[in-house]
Length: 516
Image 1 (cartoon, rainbow, N blue to C red):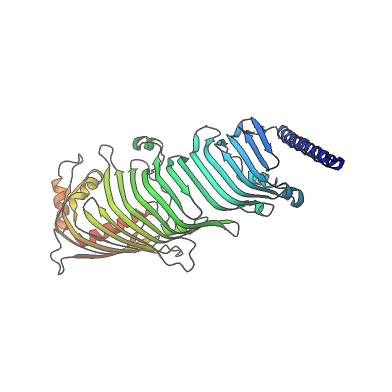
Image 2: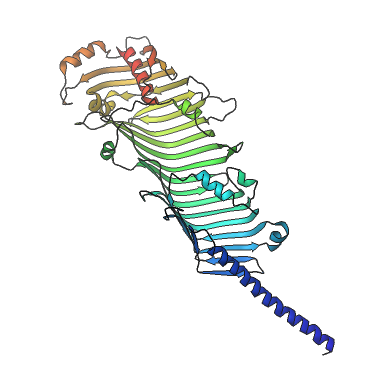
């Protein structure tokens, strides 16, 4: 071996030794910086971990069992705690950091995070976001971001009751950009290809109702919510004990909600907007109970057009399909009698142009077909204009054969009235606004009889029954087409009652005019 070769080999060996030493020195310097950073965090923030593995050549960084704890600055109580199995950064670019003063990362993986947060309504989320945004010193670009098998719980800081809970949460997104410009937006970063799935989600809607969803899948443009339930947290009797004014008991179960071809964002970076081509609601089963023994709520109930018009965000839903729904409404009027019941089954509906953000908006239309009280066909066409400030609406319906006795499970306990006979066919059109309505109605019926019951709800009050039936036509056969007709104007809305009460008192006025 020549002297020159020996020198070359020696230089190579020394260079390798220096590189190896330099690698470990650099690794040690970086790890020491991380440790100093952790030890110099604000007193109310603590970060612990089992170990850190650093691969300088690949730009990979892995933290084992990190535990982040954030406490209140004054209370020293835990506000948020985040425990992870591992936190991995892959493909961190030193070149971008040194030459372009940006942080570029190929991949971030968060495995098995468990987050516990104690919600304090006195802490402004705006202030929190401002603090985060003020920390933006260097632009950050992330090619891919994953969260695997997360568990999230949110508690009320005062009562320590669960406000939100979600299990087996998985999230992925890509091309995340976070910089000074994006930090000023409502969503302080840009991203693409967002996907989220989770099981067993629980959320407290308000003081009375809870929401649970068995499975959620959210994609870039399509989402599904499976086995969704909204239920009052008290039973029917217990709820009444907690009420100062009447309120419905809810028990809603939906097999699936699919939201297709949607887009969401912020209009002019301020007003939230949501648009979608269609929403499909499959097999909703809705049970509603109202205890009328509780004091009335005299607050004004706005029409649906006004409720949509007054939304604090832009909503544009081209079509909503409701498939195979069932609705049961119960109303308890008397303490010693069961609640009266109305039932709608096999209900299918199509809602078009639902929202407040349509340009040159056509009327919102609702077409419904259903079975009423188990045997009667019911078809409804309902329309209204969201932009009409008088809340003008049109409600048309045709009702098939209805045996009057089918209504007795509602009439007897609530009104002490028993009906007999048959309504063979009924048509009506209600034209109304926020104040009054008019109704045109025609009905074909036979053998109609009204029995007024005594206070015990069982025995017939012969005097009152006879008196009422003097004025009620037994049938409609005296008309040329066998239909009794009525036209009633200026039916006044009771504004502290629901929209459906307005529909009902309009129908009642038409039937009264036609049959008496």
